[in-house]
Amino acid sequence: MIFPSSLLENAVNEFARLPGIGKKTALRLVLHLIKQDPASVQQFSDTIAKMRSDLRFCRNCYNIADGDFCNICSDRSRKRDTICVVENIRDVIAIESTGQFNGTYHVLGGVVSPLDGVGPDQLPIGDLVRRVREDEAREVIFALSPTIQGDTTMFYIQKQLEPFPITITTIARGISFGGELEYTDELTLARSLSGRLPVGQYVGRNS
Amino acid sequence: MIFPSSLLENAVNEFARLPGIGKKTALRLVLHLIKQDPASVQQFSDTIAKMRSDLRFCRNCYNIADGDFCNICSDRSRKRDTICVVENIRDVIAIESTGQFNGTYHVLGGVVSPLDGVGPDQLPIGDLVRRVREDEAREVIFALSPTIQGDTTMFYIQKQLEPFPITITTIARGISFGGELEYTDELTLARSLSGRLPVGQYVGRNS
Image 1: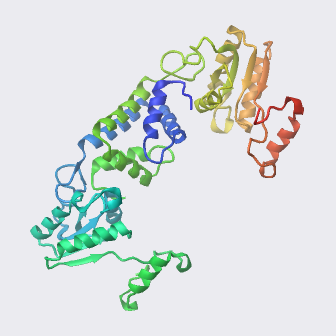
Image 2: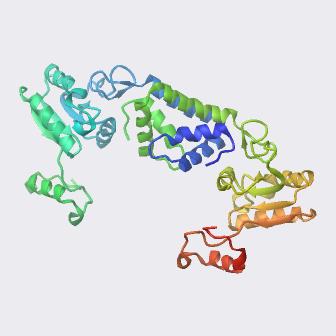
Image 3: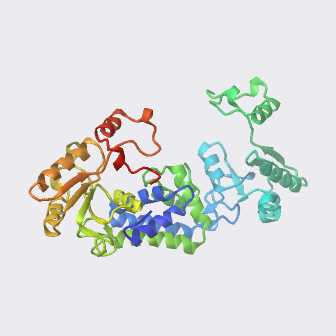
C-alpha cells in the first residue's frame, strides 16, 4: 500500500499492529478518524493513553482496577469466602454480565501450559492459597476453559487446596441453550451425559 | 457488559465508536493494549492525535498531505497535464498501489447524490476546471464507482470540461481477473461486451 502522507502511514501502521486489524481495516479506521473533529480524536487518544498509564491490577485478585483494589474486591456486599478462579479479565466480565455471582474472583492471567513455557510458578496460585486461608474461604469455583491446559491448572490448584476444609467445584459443561444435540461435539455430549441431573433439579430456560 | 474499571470502560467505549468495531472487539483491542508496555501505547496514542491535528488536505488536489501540497502534487516527475478524478483518498491509494499511473489526482471527497443532499456545488469541481485551464491539461480520467451517483457526477463534470480541448476517459469496466463469467452480474457483463477490444490490443495477465 502506497500512502500519500507519512502521518497517515504512521497512524495506519499503529492500528495495523492491533490483533485482527489488517492494513485495509486500519486505513478505514484512520480515514474515519480524519473525518471526526480534532477534539474527539484527541479525546480518543487521551483515553487510550490514560487507560494504559493509570490502569492497575487489583492487589487481591489481579483483576483490572482503577486503584489498589478492583471494584469487586472493594465491594463489601460481595462474599469474600467464595472465590471464582478464572483465566483472564474477559472471563470476569463475562461472568459479571450474568449477574448470577456474588463472590470474588481470582484472575490467574493464564493457565499452566508447559509447551508455551508457562509453569504453575508463573501464575499467582500462592496468592490464591493465601486468600483461601486468610479469608476463611468456603468455596473455590473453577471457571477455566475445558482444555487440557485448563484441566491441568485446575487439578494442580486443587492439590494445593487439599489441606483446607472447602468445597471445590467447577462450572458445568454441557450443551448450551439453543444448541442442537446432533451438532454437539462428542466430548461435550459425553460430559453432558455423565453430568446428568435429576429432572427435579433442572432449572430450565423459562424458570 | 459490566466492566471492573471505568478506565477500561472508557477505552472500550472509545474503540467501539469506530466503524465496524463492536464492544467485544473493542474489549479485545483494549486488553491487547494493556499487555503492551506503556511507552508503545503512548506512541500509539500520540501518533493518532498527531495525525489528526497535523494532517492537511492538498491545496491542489484535496488528497491528504503533510504540508500545503501532497507528495504527488509536489513530485516534479508526475505529469500535471493528466488528472485522474476519484471519489476519495482510498481510491488514490488503490491506484497508486498499481504503480501504473504517473499523472496527478483530483479528490472530489464524494459524488453528486441528491438523495444524500450532495449537489455538485459541494464538490471541488470548480477547482478541477481551474486546474484543467491553468495546467493546460491534456487528459482527464474518471475513476469513479460505476453507480448511478458516480455516473451522474462524471456526466456533470464532463459538461463543465466541454470547452477545453482535452481527452476525457473513464477507466474500463469489465470482468475482473480471476472472475468467472457465469457469476458476473448482467450490467458488468453487458459493459464488458460493449467495450470489447480487438485481441491484438488485449494486454493479458501474463504480458
